[in-house]
Image 1: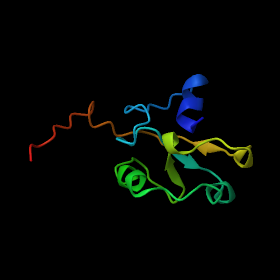
Image 2: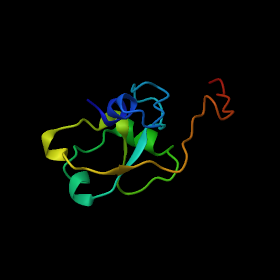
Image 3: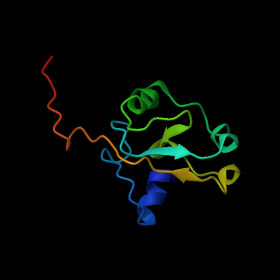
Length: 97
C-alpha cells in the first residue's frame, strides 16, 4: 500500500489528482527523518520530473503514490506541504505542440 492509498483510507487530505499514475505532484509528502528517507528506494526520473513541479520541495520530498509501506518504514513520519499545484484546477492551459 502506498502512502497515498493509506492517506485516503484514513481520511487524510492528500489529493492525488492523477490517482497514483505518476502524472502530477499533488500527493507530495515530506519525510521528516533522514534515516527513514534513506531507507526508501531512489526516486525514478519520472518521479523527479513530477517533484520538480511540487510546491515547497525539500531534500526529503517524495510523491506519496511512490512510497510503499514496508515493515522497515514503521514509525516513519511525513508532513504535507502547505499547498499543492494542481495544474488541471489552477488554471493551467496546455499549449499545443
